Length: 296
Image (cartoon, rainbow, N blue to C red; front, side, top):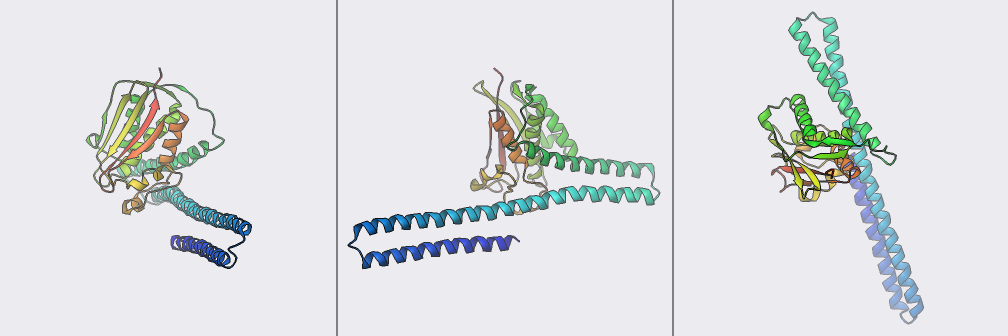
């Protein structure tokens, strides 16, 4: 599928280049044959410019559409996998409980596993629904005063439980206590997505540090640092796009829908802040920053 789309992109680019070359050759030949007629020369030049512009614009839009469709297909495949896997797991455990006699300890282990699969399923559904709510018809923010440090602590506790991470692998370095004005649900989702992203792309050994700090008394930043896969310079802005997932060997193994960082940036913009990523390159770790205004 991907190879087919890449061939389509190559075909459109080649076709556009050939059309432009033909136009230039025809125009140059026409000028050599009729160079005295200045008005026709001007009109021909204008027509040639319009034709070339149209071909270039058409090719750009076609290539973008092909890439957008490729990202949507990847998203659908990822969501399908994220929905199907926990459902199949829960079904398997339920069938085992119904057909085999198990001791109490084993039954409790199965129950815990099913609850974890259920949480994973709900998280995927909530991720997709939240993305829809951040679209053009997004509802108004339910604003209230929020203790950002408390939100970070809650998200860290959840990550340690979900990913079975020891406290020393997921550290928090709080700055001065600050209060922001925001939607508690959206701010919680943004911070949680940053931490989840750092854990997932850390590889086998998770070393993640979360820091909060005030900036000029007007903003507060949440910096999430990891020592994982890192990001190429050309990908630092791309990764915040909807459905986009940075290429690389680790990306193929990491489960996800490509919506987490899109949600982070959307939440930041809705609250009058911003979000960005920093990295020295592949294999050198990453830092994701969420900046939000402080209540004055």
